[in-house]
Length: 341
Ligand code: TXA
Ligand code: MG
Image (cartoon, rainbow, N blue to C red; front, side, top):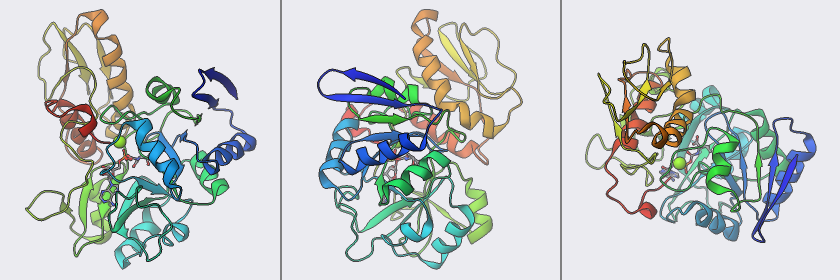
């Protein structure tokens, strides 16, 4: 475990890839003390806070610069503990049995006397719950013993972190610790399914392909597909924004563009990042946020002012990859504090 002093605001503990039980205990103690601890999950790194501690949750919104109308996902070590805070519908019980632990978040009605702070749920009658699969995350959740609110551990509106280094680049000095469990295996955020209404609605494509969910429970509506269907408060258009603008479905590269390649790369790019040479969507998903970070960081040196992204098929994880790229490509018309997530 490495420790570094970061001014008088905080001490930043980087709990390393050779994590011990003691590191996990320390991280749980920090959460109990109302501090913020980032931890790796199989999707992206989350910024954790005690979901029942209003002050800790308020500090979490402040550290991210996230608007308080955008609710947080609560994390649990198993379905039984998750279902103490929300009422499982029959479909929720089925999906939990099939996909938890894993990259699936379910939005359900809060139980009466739900202990999770109103602030964490942005005052909504529903709560988003998830059981991650990453073993270190599960160990932390077990050691802590209560719901952990954890949005992606990035500043609001920025690229999600898929490594501890990404977390520190954005949040160093604002958080108490990072539990470094290495790179995230899935690399894309969880799929969010709203089961709180009469029909299931996909709020965010993510680590579990919607086709796999539909194979289990039948057709799922897409958020916003028709008027009246719910959308997630955080799914604003400009999101996951790298510093550079993104051009989608590129079939050629301009001289001032960095290339995001998928399969045989287009010729002529001064800077490029290969998502998957063999056009494998799982591999591309796991590398997407690393790619955006790398291209962003190297662009100026190579005279690049834009990212050109090659087309990616919209099936399986490709749906989530295209969703993130479309948001990254959206015009930045909103002030940063309204870009949530
Ligand atoms: O993979 C993930 O889901 C990661 C890891 C850390 O678990 N977390 C994550 O959290 O992506 P965040 O806060 O970046 O995105 C959560 C999304 C937001 O768009 C938010 O609006 C939506 O979930 N959400 C949370 N609670 C909700 C609710 N009750 N109803 C509808 N949407 C909700
Ligand atoms: Mg986010």
